[in-house]
Amino acid sequence: MPSSDAAPATADVGASAAADPLRSLLHATRLVAPECLATIVAEHAQLLGADEVVLYLADYDQRVLHPLPGAGVPSRQQLTVDGSVAGLAFRRVEATRAPEKNSPQRLWLPLLNGTNRLGVAEVVAAEITDALEAEARALTAVVADLIAVHDTHSDVFARLRRRKSLSLAAEIQWELLPPLSFATDRVSIAGALEPGYDIGGDSFDYAVNGSCADFLMLDAVGHGLPAALLASVAIGSYRHARRDGLDLPDISAAMNSTISDQFSGSRFATAAIARLDLHTGQLQWVNAGHAAPLVVRDGSVMEPPPCPPHPPLGLQKDEPGICLFQLQPGDRVMLYTDGIVEARTPGGEYFGEERLADFLIRAMTAGDPLPETLRRLVAAVLAHQADQLSDDASVVLVEWPAQGSDADT
Image (cartoon, rainbow, N blue to C red; front, side):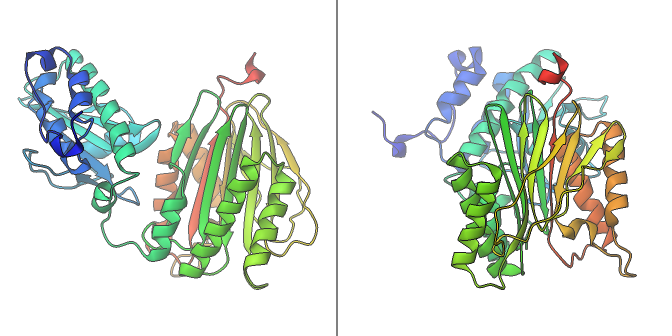
């Protein structure tokens, strides 16, 4: 068997490869080093009938698209997510053709690992035909999965995505996070956190198992590394209890016990620990000193029934109760930390729940995808506070879709 040292750095672009570009790409990348991926993709452009294919990855706060370099890869500059055709493809999560009437033409395709946006691919050809677009879609789908796989055992892509150095606390937090978005026909989930390069105690998690979607919003007290360490222990305890099949009160009790055992009495975390029945739409959650969920339905914000808050995790003496709310198909549920609503202008005006609710309603009315809704929300919160957050700001948005629910059958 060939060893990894014998792995070719370039693709065999012979006649057999031209007959099946996708199979050729898979064969060429089987043992390829991550830093050679852009080269392999560029060399497969001719198999698609294109002149060039260039990959771009979004940075941590999804403001900039960085071209992935490699031997033989055409030189490119970084592009902004807001204000470029490439960014439009990223924001809308759809193929976008540059408005060029002359040759060559450009097609921009989102790089998606499932529904998680990684970046975009640029396809350049004398003419972008429907057949070329179909081939390019298939190729970029495979490439996105390859990037996601290589990202688990290489620093190549993580380094490229950084516009600046991450703090140690942010490094820990980003490694804790699940993908920023996930979807099935029964649920869509997206999350965001800011400041992306210096996040401390905010974090979130989710898991979808059968007919159940679990999701968590966590705000660990303090800032920097101490808050990140507390958050990492809390998330680990949450996953351990959730994977043991515990119900929400017992998950909360397990997290509370872990935090109180490992940290002093002045260290705690607020949390909203939620579970959604994907068949019935019943939402239940435990309120551990946290803000109540926001529910957006048919262009308005619904108020869940009053739910007495319990003390934060690490300070609880009794097992908390469960709060309940019945969703309708198409509802969106948001969990957020106080850094969202308490962001203030230099003059002291809070972003506030009313502005947050209005933003969600307008985004839902416009049909914005969940990940783009949160990207724009975080940008709005930052702009409100003149790009200087005084506290971490994190958010999770969950949609129980109008299709695929038992309520529709």
